[in-house]
Image 1 (spheres, each protein chain N blue to C red):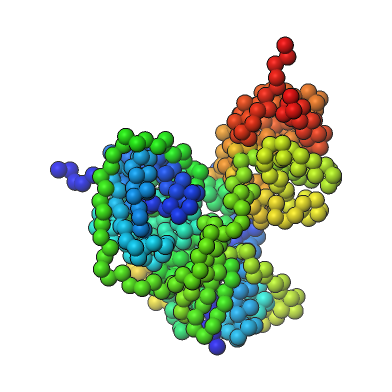
Image 2 (cartoon, one colour):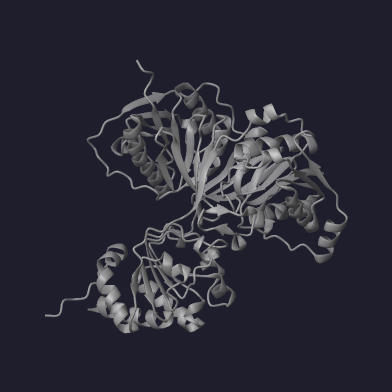
Length: 333
Length: 275
């Protein structure tokens, strides 16, 4: 025996669709890492009526599933989850523990890391390995304009919360199998000090500018409010949302609720159109990982133009008009 | 009267953050500092509590000597007392080490503290970890991302929106809360208040010695993470340049990227072939 096999753990966060997806994305990355480390991938899931998740994690790459299923765990409780996770980690000593950077994960993970006396990096946008098999946690810094490579050298597990959407999940595969360990609730779970009085799904629309696929963003370079308003037409044609820079919001062309940037919304669209925006750091800090950026600006040297996949050197308002016209024609055809 | 601690942080103004593009290193020393925006909301929350039922507010920050400025700003807003935790050995502390030292400072200098407020995240590192880890350090019940706080007797009621769920939670003092930027829009410090805070108010400066933290203890509770390098995000973009008359350029652009765009928006924008 050369010692026990390394284990990469993914915490099962499942309370809504979005939380479930990030768990599956982390399983996918854990599978990649496990090949390089010759480790097993283990999903840990805590709650009640967990069969759905056990099947889901199996189909998405877990080799082993640790499930603590009990009626008293029906709603999320940071305190109870902490007690259970601390116990499991201490008993089994995983090498890596990944948690989705959901609101829950970002409240839960720091406390767990502290309790385990180990390191944690926040909201990672990449994971890698050093030649010696140390987890490189790539975390944004300074509003996402800088990235830091962080390692936890001596303490275990190496913990990271990872931004949703960073990795692509493995397609669902019903043929996969996993070892499922159903674990009992420790008898001495104390009453939680934080009591849940009310709990309901927020009534707001699921669609928000933060999760929009297409965003058309305008800056001062559009010239005036009327030109800015034309972004609505483009957004409608593309099924997207309108965003604005700070000067535009200050000028009253758009409301604060569509401000994109450090002081406003953080977006990660699949396609971002950027009209007449120079790309000041306060704005680009909110852009996250836009897959495909189209920037329109008279100045080809503008930061936004250099960040773009497609940089159109033109008057922003003029090109916007032509683009809307051309799109209308094509959609009507 | 409630005894409230607000932990605040001085962060560089991102707009003025100077860095060396070649080496990707930050010139933190050259950056102008400001109070982290979410910390300001936490100070405001404390001031509202004070206005409602009375409270003594102590603001605490850990940082270089210059971080004293944000304490004075908080005093000018209406806080009562400022504590600067400052020691060369603390430079580069991660959230594990920071929460240890802050916990010790609060335990020593603000005994009997009922409520600790923190900003939910900072604009520089954005880890959002110090608040929850401080709660762990002091073994306090805690809630993150609070939008509203209500106090009745020794019970604190917190409302928040997390992961698209609206929650109301309750806990007893002593407790810790991190405050989001949704509510508690911070007041401006008056000019007179600023003058007074900068001219008169005393700031208590504490170092590791005063906190009885020995180098060995600091090492034992020291940073768990290490930053290998910091770099500017490189865009690996193709950066196709399109020029020419706007009308033609729009059509050219759509011809080239119509499939990509159609796939994302879920409807075809492909031009019909002319036959």
